[in-house]
Length: 104
Length: 240
Image (cartoon, rainbow over the protein chains, first blue to last red):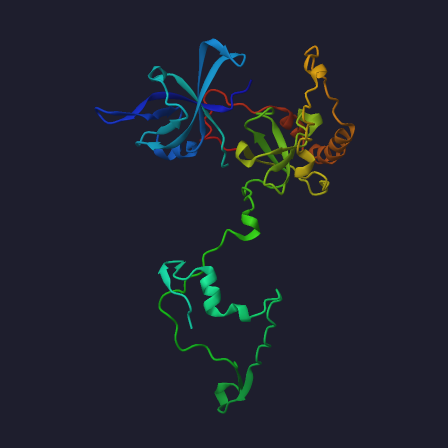
């Protein structure tokens, strides 16, 4: 199957030094180096895909869907909100940044 | 004379009905016909003396105002209540009839298809063509599509008006009236045959589109190929 998503990594939760806001996750998208480039991905849907032991609806693959909401900082990181907050074990894990809703 | 006052910008002190009563609009008859325009008074020609002044001048019947307010007059807010509250979906400027689109989601994700026109509902009417890449004439949402710069010249192609939103809506399935016999069947699903008239519609539409595609070398192969991202390709840097 062809890849129709950009690859990204979950770097952590939005946080200050001593408090973290688990409702917002930070994503690093491959190839995005600054805030200008990150503008393309705003609003795009994101999928955190993982597997589990128990098959639900015939599949062991599970997805937590989310959206990229805004850029984070100057270096191309991006903030995102998921339908369920991401589990902390997702840090460093891959995330799929879909190309829709498309504006081009 | 102004009959209402503003409590805040665009918010009047009197309600719609109170204003109606105050203005005495019950006295007026509205018949839906626009008021007949008074014929514009013709400009007068005036003779002027002097050699170098031209012999005559045209003087307008209504003079230009002596006073102009220093601030612009505010335009009234555009009401969204017209047309039953429905606003037409704006079509992206990059999408024109004949544009090759990449489908991003759904059964045919990755396929390159030809855009035909936008339907009443705002969805895009699209076809593979079917022979080229297996995508039938279908509706697709703008948000799930990337418009490429490749265009097919659909100048001679006429898209039948029968392809409207009603053509694509699923036929209402009859309510299950507790048919136990059907419930306890083998579990085999009866495969419905694709309606022959729809297949014929597809063929007649695609015949024209394929003729337009054949004019450009390799365009049919391009449409048959599926789009995919590879390592080192980043969507924000790609020029579609």
